[in-house]
View 1 (cartoon, rainbow, N blue to C red):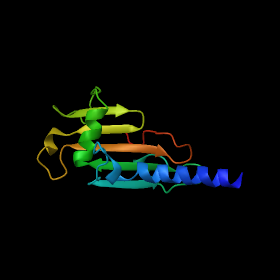
View 2 (view 1 turned 180 degrees about the horizontal axis):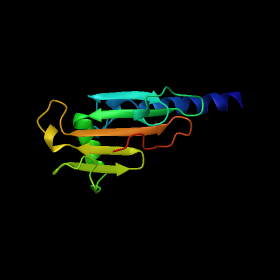
View 3 (view 1 turned 135 degrees about the vertical axis):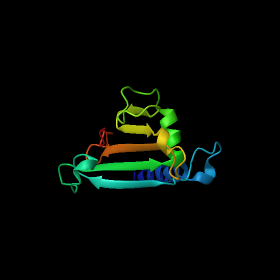
Amino acid sequence: MTWLLFGATTVAALAYAHAADPSSDPYGLWKTLQGAMYKIHSGSVADRAPPTAKDRMLTLLIDGQGAKDVFESIGPDVQPVCSGVDKDRDRRRKGIYCTYSAEDARTKEGPYRCWIGVNLLTGGTETTVSC
């Protein structure tokens, strides 16, 4: 029984390590995430409250190409757009909220920005930003 448990644990650990190894990715799906920040907090991002034992959220903020990839993956656009600016675009899917800002199209960070919210107590995604 001990050998069976050891074998199962070893196989699981190797599978996990292999899944997260970009060098074993024949399709090139793993990407380096540039322009990202995260915050562990309670409430919404705007609340600026530290996490508590009963409310612990993770918000990941992505700019640049990573945000564009997410934005394009979660379409379609939703209306009305939070900014109210012509040619701006918003997309939402459960705990993911992405924006395209026409005004920022020429900035270093680019026009795309995504917030991904995760409830660290339940593991589910939740919206942590609002308009």
